[in-house]
Length: 207
Image: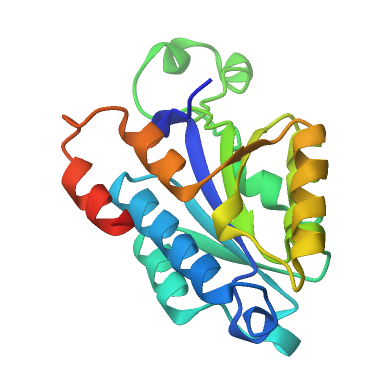
């Protein structure tokens, strides 16, 4: 099973400088998170981020926040470790909307029009990365799996304060049905072909 860009959303969990200062391989992890955000922006994928207790740990990396904003995404502040408990699932799954404009629904009696929802196409594959891998990233991923999303964890954009905790998180995620991938895997699966019109810009991001 390969990633399909048309079915994906990107969620970046808690890339906050105060937290990253204690994270193993933080510069590499942060660089890969920014690459993922830039790729999502180029491909017009929904892009979201979270911040754990921002009053104490501060805001997201400024570069990341800028990309999320430019892509039309949002940053979810949270106190719970898992972003699902803070309402992330509601952002990832579009709500039903009442039909608007002309069409068959308009020709129905008013009492029946409400029964014809207009729903945006679902993007059920969640590409997920973040810190700490064994706490906020892990709990968010498990919550999304419980909500029947497909979860793809980008391992080289995730970390913890220690390698042992990071690796334990990856083992547990794989055992619970998450797919473990890398930034380059995501890039080339989103592209699928060297003939993709965005092949060169995306390739430049990962060189």
